Amino acid sequence: MKSATVESLRNIRFDRIVQDFRNLDPNDPGLWPVAPRIAVLVGLFAVVLGLAWWFDWKAQGEDLEQRQGEEVRLKDEWLSKKRQAVNLDEYKRQLTEIDRQFGALLKQLPSKTEMENLLIDVNQAGLGRGLQFELWKPNSESARDFYAELPIAIRLTGNYHDLGNFVGDVAKLPRIVTLNDVAIEPAKDGSLKMDALAVTYRYLDDEEIAKQKKEKAAQAKAGAK
Image (cartoon, rainbow, N blue to C red):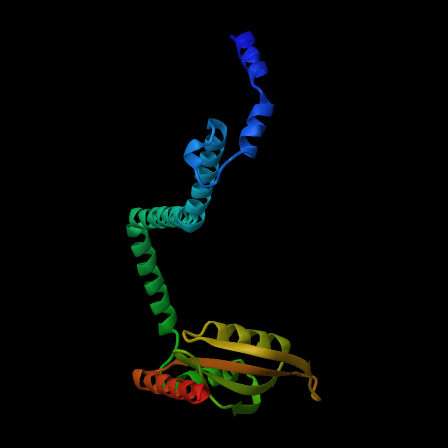
């Protein structure tokens, strides 16, 4: 079989094929020899394939890649939702626990009417330890998302242990009070002087929250102009 193929290739006269291409009549392709006809058909077929790829298949290929990428994205999204559905009960339990903890923390924030009692408790915590208040200066209240901060500059004098017990008593209050920027230095009479910024917190009522949202919306609208 192999020797017959080699023999057939040897019998092909390439000079005659070249001569066939030289004597072509472009006005009468029906009389062209076989080799030029085949060559023209192959060329036309290649041109048709190139035009089809450029004007149609290329866009289809890009669209196919896009759809394949979308398929992968949808599969990932489906798997994510499936995991959420499987763990839905656990998510609900966690959400309930978060709501409970948030409610417990919120209860530690006094309302506007309870703020005065909280300040009295802080004052009594110092007096109860035998400390002397040299400064009690409430600063301006600043509102946050759902709560407000009231910083109070305080200065107390007393011995080391009484100051430490006062800090512990403030930490044990049922309402949240933090002592910031604490500085202790000796006083003239041999005792210690403590300067601190006591920050108390209270939650905003519905009316205050609505007012705050209205003011933020007005500021955003003014900034957009």
